[in-house]
Image: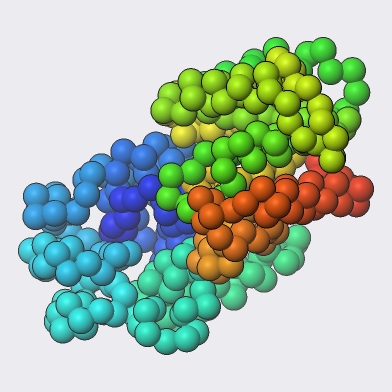
Length: 384
């Protein structure tokens, strides 16, 4: 059986498909082809649970012809857009997608009422994608899901699975469906971190802070992010890492310099900050290679971030996080450890008092995690 999975979106959306892809491959023993975009190709480049990745950029009539060439028995369409459903008619195969009027009245679609029933509205994006995978064969899916859960909870079965698995199955070692990076990425990031922290004389927690977001409106203003970065960098047991990319790097550097040369209010007293924050944090200037981001996040103790791609990447890697989220995003875009500081207004509407409260709550959560030994200290060459 050949299953095509059509999914071509942004970083967070693409990462949240990993669990569904893994389950599709493992449960149905199928040939799994992902029709995605260049970003999805990069994310899956080193993963073992996908047989082929095709960059269609976006689904349209032309890319539907490309999909048709692979003679899929099922196509999982994660976005039931009417034009997508119409374009896929040419593939002459069963399309599994969410129930909307165009899909409901298309004879070649098998639909799941993910937009209609309350039970689905409570699910996050990753869970919804798994529901679409289940639609291929619910009986097989449920049986395999039970077997997998038993395997996870039974060390003896794990050992047997790793030793005796057939060539068309995936061993226990791949159950975590984490994003994988190349040896080149691992070597490059190790060299950067060793150079950055070679002078550290005592153990510390490496706290990544991501102040950058495009889609999320519920976040902190840039000045408040700098205040948070400044406060975390003053915790003796913590070092702060910020990963930039070309679009934001220069502006972020200028913002820090401006922050460093003005008077700021910290803990109720005025403190003169002059060229010190930039020296107290570590900046990794990434290019647009998402696997560099994945590799460096795999080494950190914790990520603090709004609801954006970086935090979903950390969740995939099982890195602890503090999400600065709206209530709505805690459901739809849930992180694996579900640890949030709630933001009740778009960042443009937040006043200084509200920003201070969010910063204080974030710091309290971080300090509680450290006090309870819930975080792993940074170690050279240690990928989580």
